Length: 269
Length: 276
Image (cartoon, rainbow over all chains, first blue to last red; front, side):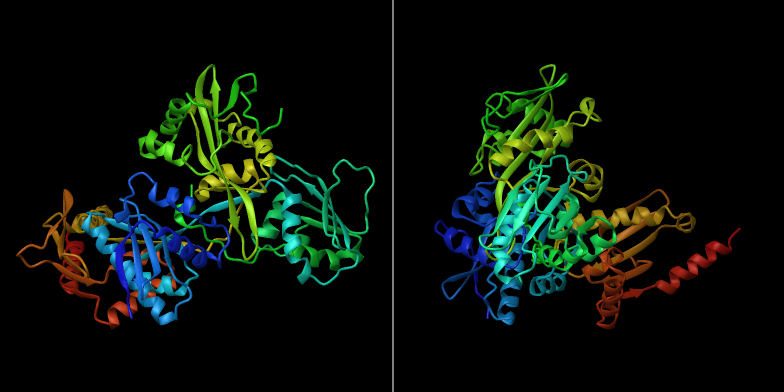
């Protein structure tokens, strides 16, 4: 059922990068790995040697990998997500044991993992091995360029959206306590071709459906999953005229990022 | 001049904001060490983290000087962040903000944030992110930068591996217990020895004395209290209540947790309490 664990060898980076990118795919907030980024982020880090990078192989294929710092902080930990749950559980446990043995051998007092608690296989394996869950990671976010963000989100999701009427919205933004406001008014046209234009300087603009909120409320809506209804009831969002509320809500709902957030330790600052 | 051209400085009556150039490194390190202490890292670490990073540009590091003296520094890294299938958004991940005590309280974090905004926009950066403690978030990131905390699923899992660290933690716990007036009274006559057998570690004796606490190898004598427990039980107080109760019940029912000598210690308590 289990594989074999060995230290990193030159040439492993390709499969490791592929494995990490696949393992992190269900999450938001991580940096896609390239061989160059991985070399810098893991192997090039001061104090890290190839012996600090453990590779788990099964049937000649890399199915897991972990990198640990001298002080026992686990920089990165991935086990293939395409394995059957029972097999994956065995791989996770084997890699944890190997990391503990390696850390003990070098006189490390403490081992610390920063991993997604939503991965039940990893969470259960670590708790069963006696690990204590101590704290969550604290990542905060602000929007610098709302126009580019909305364009990216709507380009990806427009096909999934019912065609709302009206198809033209004007988004009026205030800075809230955000220090920089790059666009105070955006014109969104959903009818092909999709466009999001900065009309901050325009004196006249369509008012078929006017959406008003501040940048912080927009951040909460898109990234923190604060519902449109909550922002409306808290008077942090206003939509006029009333006839446009349904269409505006559909538009705003389409912007929400539902993917759970997880930033691996090695992507931290 | 475009913002992405390294600008020599943005002048203000007191502070001069300057993007990184060779020669500024000692000043940057000095500010970082004042802010975070030597534990932040040395010049080798700084060079790895910044100039050696793939995609680094001098616009990623800002130094603030006042009367030619370095007083603050700000660092960032522009990276694509994956936000789900097919959604990759360019983000400036920021941190290593340090400000000398004499320059604090003058709005430097917000001014530094605004100083870098134009060059980030020219680099097509869409989002700005930072890592902070909840306290720092409430004090700086939320009011000054308008940031919002992301609901992450990331958890930190910790396990003590060495007897040395375990004993250190047990000794800290013993000191907290000893500070209780009733326990101090109990210890006036003679010490209290608790033998701890934690699965995966060498048994040890936690000895609570009137004048201090020690945690040593298991002794030959009979302890007052003998406690056998699995490692996770030691952290039950930090767990959510439901999880803590489950851990305790599971440990007791499975026979992993045992306490011997409790009646003897309670009797000693009662005797001490009854004494005038």
